[in-house]
Length: 296
Length: 296
Image (cartoon, rainbow over all chains, first blue to last red):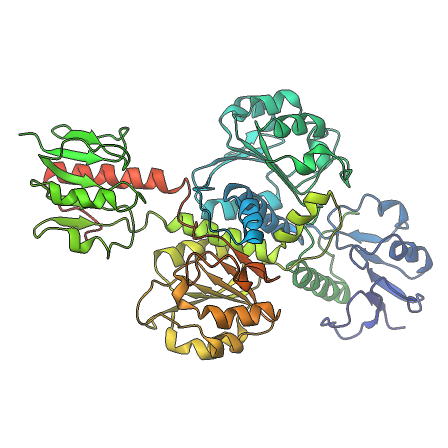
C-alpha cells in the first residue's frame, strides 16, 4: 500500500511514491487509515492532535511549533515526533525590532498625533550606541543580534552558561547597571521563572527599556508594573504573566509601556519557512532518511 | 594671536593651540573677532548663519546638516564650507525600519488595542521575503540595506544611473509591478520632483507599501492619497509635500497610512557622530590639513 501523508496545505512539492491528503484543522478530516506521516496544522486548537490516536499506521508526527511538551503524551511508542524549531525565529526577531524601535523612536506619540493631524516635532532616542543585554542567546537571540549589529547597537550576550563571547546568567547583577535595554528571550523553565524581580529591575539605570519576547514568567509583572507606572523604567512586551493580561491591569496604560498580545511569532515569514521544512522532511521520509528537528 | 573656534558644545576634545568659545544658538553670542573656525549649531533657525558676516578672520564653516544650499550665499569668498554628510544616515535608517516594521507588524492596531486592554490577536505581514525597491542608493540607502539584509528582505537597488548590482531609475516601470515596498530616499532635485505620480503608483501591486524618508516632493501627494484612501496601497511617510501636511488633509487619517513629522534624522544617534566629526575636523584644522566633507 502507498504510504499516506496528511498535510495542512495542498500546494507542496511531494516526492513520488507518497499519497497525500489535506487537513488544515477545520471541517471533517479525511480517512486516517494508512496515514504514516502527519503534519499538524499550525495553531489550530486541541482537535488535530486528537487524531493521532486514530492513525494505526503512523510513523512520524511533524509539529510546526517549537514547544511540543503538551503533544508528547499523545505520541504512541515508536512514533517519531519532530518540532518546528527555527521556523519562528525571524518573525520573532522582526517583531522585537518593531517593539524596540517603536519605543526608541516614539512611535506611540506620532501615531497619537496623526489622529489630530499635528506636525509637532521632537528629538527622540535612538537604537544606535545603546547597550543591549541580550539574555537568551539561542537561534532567536542570534536573529535579533543580526538586526542590532546592523543598527550599531552595543550588544552584550548573556546565556545560561558562560562561553567565549557570551556572559553567564550569574553575571547579570554586574551587567544590569550599565544596560540601556534588558532584552529577554527565554523559555519558561524552573530556572527562568521570576528571574527578573524587583532587585534586578532596581539595578537598571533610569529610563532603561525592559523587553520581553520569550515567556512572560521570566519577569515579576507586579515589580515591573511598579517601576513603569512610576516612570523610572520603560517596557516593550509581547509576552506577559498572566496571558491575557487582565484588561484593567495598570501596565496596559502606563505611559512608558508598549504591549502586544503575544503575536511576535505569527507573521507571513513563518509559512514559507514552514513549507520548506515540511517539503524537506517529506523527501527524507520518502528516502527512509532520518528526519531533522526530532524531539523523540 | 591664538586661532579661535566657535563650537556649539563645550565638552569636545580640542587640540592644543586653539582657543574655544561656545555658542549653541541661544542667547547672546560671544565676541566674534578672531574666530577662524565656526561650527554652526544644529537646527537652530536663521540667526546662527547670520553671524558669519561678522567674523572677519573666518577661514572655515562646519555645518552639521547634509543639505547646505541655503548657506552657500552667506559664505564669503575664500572661506571653506564643510557639511554634515553621513551624520544622519543611521538615524534615518533606524526610523525607516521603525516605519516599515510598524506597517508590516500592525503596530497601530496593537497600540489602539492597548488603550482598551484587549488581547485580540491576529496574524500579520512580515518584512522577511518582501521585495523592497530601494530607490536612492547613497549612504542612507546603504544603512537601510544593512537592516533589510539582516531581516532577509529581498532588496532591489535603484539609483539615478545603473551600475553593477544597481538598476537605473529608467528601469522603474519594469520593476514596480513586482515590488512589495517602494522605498524612496531621494533629495529634492528637478530630476526627482514628481518622480512617483499616478501611473507609477498604479503599476504597484495591491497592498504594496510606499515609503518615503527622502524628500516629500518625490511623490505626487494627491495621487498617493487617492490610492491609500481607496485602500489599494499603504503608505509609511516621514516626509510629505507640503510640510507641514495640513491638519485636515485626508492622508492623515487614511487607514493604511503611517505619518511622522519629518523626524527621521533627529535622534540621539546624531550627536555622538556629530561630535566625533567636529573633533576630527578640529585636529585637521590645527595641523593645517584639508577638512573632510568640503562643499566648497
